Length: 267
Image (cartoon, rainbow, N blue to C red; front, side, top):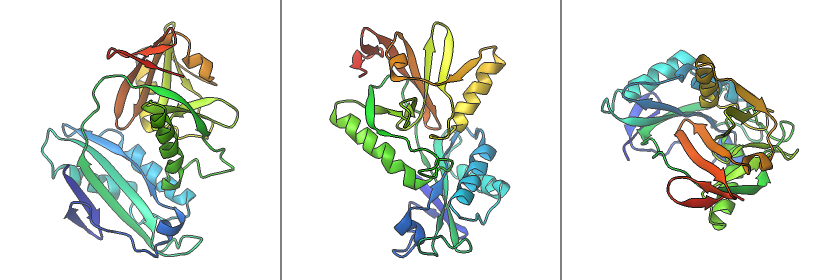
C-alpha cells in the first residue's frame, strides 16, 4: 500500500512516527480525524469533511492551525502525487502534544495521510446484534469524530467475529438500532428507504447526508425514524454507507441474509 504523510510542513513517504510518549493525545485520547475519498481525481465533499474535522477538534478542546481551505489545498496536493486513476483515502487528523488531563490548545499538531484504498467489492456481509452500545451525548464526545470513540466499534466487531459474523449492529441506550459498528445503516422495505434518525449517539455521516440528498433529487424520500432490531429482521434490503464505499449487505428472508454469495445469518 502506497502511503504519503504531511507533517511539520512537509510531505513524507510512508507513515513516519509523529507523536511523543508524553503527548496529551497519546495519554488521554483527544485525537480527532476525518476521512474522505478520492477517485479518478474526483474528491467529493472535502469541505464538509474538513469542516467536521475542525468542529471535532473544538469539541475535544483542540484548535486547528489550518483552515478548511488550507486543509483542502493540502489534500488536493497530496492526491496529485498519485496516478490519476488511483482510488485513495484522505485522512487528516489533529492531536495535542502539550497538556496533561486537558489539551494545550496552543500545542496542537496536524497530520494528513493519503493512501491507496480500493473501493470495496459489491458483495454482502453478515452482521449480528452487538452487546456493546453507542453512548449518549452526556457520556462521551459523540459529536466529534474522535479516536477515543472507536474502541467501542473495535470491540463490537471483535465480538461479532468471534460469533462468525463480519460486522455488528449497534444500538443506543434506549434499544434503538443506530448504525453498524463501522458505518451508517439503511433499510429498504416495500419501496421505502429508511435510516435511523440522528439522535446524537452516532455521527450523522457525510456520505449518509449525501445519499439522502441524492435520493431526494430523484424524488425518493428517506424516512429518518427510530429503528428497532426487529425491523431489520423482517423481509427487506439492508445496506450501508461510509466514505469507504457503499455495500449492499443483503436481503433478509427466512431468517437469513441472502447476499448473492450464499446466505449469512443475521441474528
